[in-house]
Image (cartoon, rainbow, N blue to C red; front, top):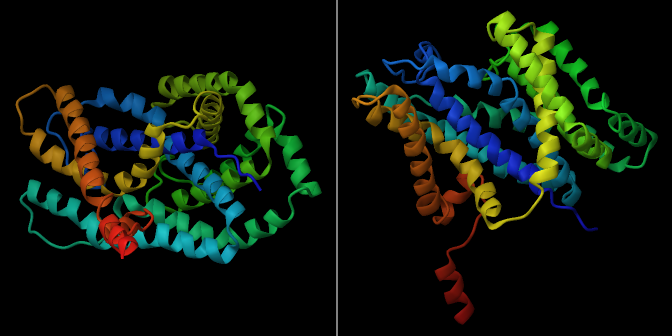
Length: 361
């Protein structure tokens, strides 16, 4: 069986990780940064927050959707036992390693910056996302395995028909609205280590799989109606800024979030479904960069915030420092040291020198 490689989904994962990095750096320049464990700049740049409020309603849900889609592709090549072993290696191992080794590093930097007593503090930090994904795989794998065997069934065909209509994808929104009504989060975008984040992510992950399962109908729909989805999202975002001071009622936030996401899927399907050497490199780097970016970001803040330069220049400098640091660590340490690769979600590769020697012998 020939499997179609979806390069647009790879690109969207890379782009979402990049936006996450910029979003986290923008938090440093908000007056409430310390309340969520970030180093805070003495000079704030609240002007950065308006575009960030547009991002924060869809950037994390997009990653959950894409993760569910990724599981669909993985199941086309593996049985459930192989998949469970593979996801344990790729998700659970980096998650546990990150809690014990990676997140304490940015806490050390935080303690150093604020002259606090130094202490070892293992915690999930930004890696909560990995823990959620692994739990979703455990919970949904039996159902997904059943659906995999039912391709071509009435349910499969009905789902395909539903997704062929412009309103079909938006039906999904009802499930998110129910979650909002039952959980009633204080803030819509408060995903990290909350029940709202867990259940919202669960729904997005589930439907990410289901959208791929439904076949090409969904992709043709978002391709055709991409401007409608994005236009509606822009209107809802404008309404949120003008009437609700960025935090609209939950049902409007959900609708805006999904409209952004379906529009992004449509544009991605049209323009990004192409292979390239850059994508091949970035798609492998994205996961390790996600794991390490917080301590690179904190180190950049510690070095750059004390400088006598304009606040927006500090923001740009921290972005540049974080990107460069992550690249250097990935390229010259994680990517090249064999035993480190699995700890950051990469495939194990034996030392090429050892391999060459064995071949010559």
